Length: 403
Ligand SMILES: Cc1ncc(COP(=O)(O)O)c(C=O)c1O
Image (cartoon, rainbow, N blue to C red; front, side, top):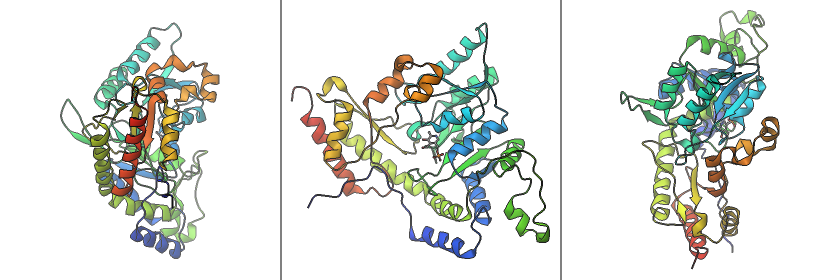
């Protein structure tokens, strides 16, 4: 009998988490409630952020932070084209625009030199744009060069919003004072994702981290219709008979997370370090297997890494098959892989709106053409990882030039 195919990704949900969700379902309080409060407190405690606010996705988290920072019509935000569309589409929600700059070759993260170049070019331009923020994405779970990015932020007085959809929990050591901080607490705000394939999951879900009280207040207001008191507050207070009394302070959004998702998130949060240790061990085993090959480049480890995705790169000069054929050969062997990412400037919406050419960002284009994301998740297990390794080695050997 043929072996079952190995999925690219799979969540790890434990019996305790199922019980915790069940308890909330039975309690009758399904929408945002007490579990959210606790999830937020525990997330803030873990990351060291002053405030954590649960929301229904990282997309909403990013949108809310930018809105709270006052980013709006015809503003520009510097970001990477090497990301999921959420990092840029939220700018369009606000009538703002992405100012894409190229990535570093090694990590695939936004290149700080390119950020500074874009800012300088803009300052020298006869018609400068209003650049209002820098939005780095910690790709795959490895930190961007936050020292350099924060230096640029201070120099030009432009706030930084961290897209941490891939990067929980990841510590970053500052080169200047050696302090260790969690990603998502270094810039003005951080956005985390608990989507089904993320390092911890609530099915769909997200978290905002901010330190400033004014940002917390605005985000808290806007995540639920601009209502001045959330439903949990209104019903659980001693003035429950006045629960219908509220005011609308702004035309907000419907971005809150449910009580039962928060219960799942709390359980996942407790196991986040264990999950990470498991994924790190898998990354090390991949490195041991593929590091010595000349047909494949392996990803850098950095000082810390969430290992949300494990991205290898094929070396085209050494192989007689292309990336997509490599993917097909793995698929035929029962290994489901993925590609992160087709860069945004190559997607028709961004290309047609801003007139990009594929080679506008050469390093992004190069990475896209060569990268393959292999299965890596808590619960993949040694046996299945061995099958992935065996398949990659087989394909690499079979199609090595000159073999
Ligand atoms: C880099 C990045 N940012 C943001 C998001 C959006 O996350 P969510 O699905 O929670 O909205 C994703 C989703 O995969 C992502 O990869």
